[in-house]
Length: 80
Image 1 (tube, one colour):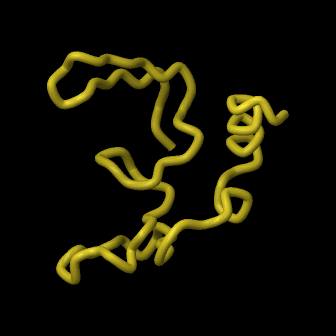
Image 2 (cartoon, helix red, strand yellow; image 1 turned 180 degrees about the vertical axis):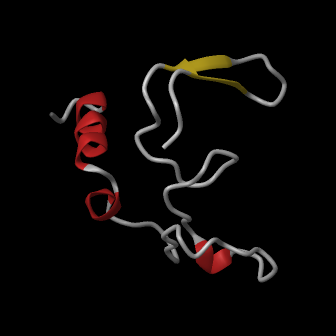
């Protein structure tokens, strides 16, 4: 998983952020993703690594996220 803290910004740089903990779960970006989603609509020339789960649409968090990330998510949305 990605090291913390992690600094970043939107493309234009107007918004900056710092993650003090690793991301709960990474879908797909320049960070190493934990899962690839909505792959049913990906372009045929896009190659996905075989060591990262890939799902056609979306998925159940509890099936892929580590338990600690599920708990952080529940606390963040007020459902702890």
